Length: 280
Picture 1 (cartoon, one colour):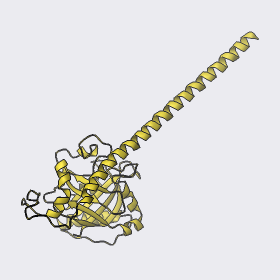
Picture 2 (picture 1 turned 90 degrees about the horizontal axis):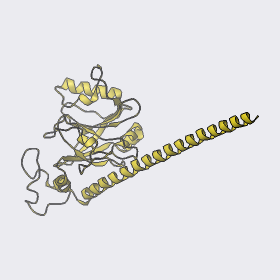
Picture 3 (picture 1 turned 180 degrees about the vertical axis):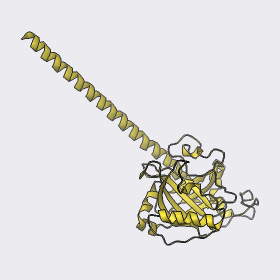
Picture 4 (picture 1 turned 90 degrees about the vertical axis):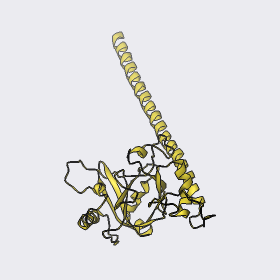
C-alpha cells in the first residue's frame, strides 16, 4: 500500500513537473515572440519616420517656383552633361542628393504610402535591400533601381524594387492594385529624376515569381532594353497575358516604361508587378 502511494506521488510529481516545464516554455516562447513582434514594428516605425522627414523636405520645396537667380543651380546634374537642365526640380531634390549621392529619383503614388527616394548602386545592386537612406542597416531598405538598368539615359524598362513590409510601408501598397477599382482611381505613378518631373500611366498589373535560371518561361525581370520592335512587342504581349485585368492602356516601341516590383505571397518567390508607360 505504502509503495503504491509513493508511486502515485512520484507520478503526480512527474506530471506536475512536465506541466510546469511546458507552461514555462510556452510563456518564454510567447514573451520572445511578443518582443520580436514589438521590436519589428518599432524598428519599422523608426525607419518610416526617417522617410517622412525626407518627404517633408521634398514637400517644402515648390517645383513650380522660379529660381532666385539665373545661376542659382549651376551645379545641377544633367543627362546631357550640361548644367541647369531642370533647375526647379533639382532644387527639390538637391538637399537629399547631397545627403546621399546614390539617390537618383523619387517615386510617389497618390492614395498610397509610396512616397520614397529611389536609389541606384550599379556596383552593388542589392545594397539598399537592407540599408537605409543614411546607409545604416535597415530592414525596410530603400526602393532601388535594378543594377542592370541604365540611368544616363534611362533605358526601355527601369525596374524599381521595394520591400513589401508588414506594416504597410515601402511597396506594400502595390498589392492594392489587385483590385481594378483601385487602379481606376490611381492610374498614375510619379517618378521624378534629379532633372525632370515625370508621370507614368499604369498599363499592366500582374503577379509573377522569380524562376530558376534553367526554367524556359517568361521572366519579366530580364526585360531591360528592347533590342527591336519584336522584342518590345513580345514583352508587352506577355505582361498583358499575365495582367489581372485589362487596363485598355496601349504602348508602342520607343516608349519608356517603369516596373515597380515587390514580394507577393501567392507563390514561393512570388512577385507583384506594376508596369507603367511614361506620358510626360
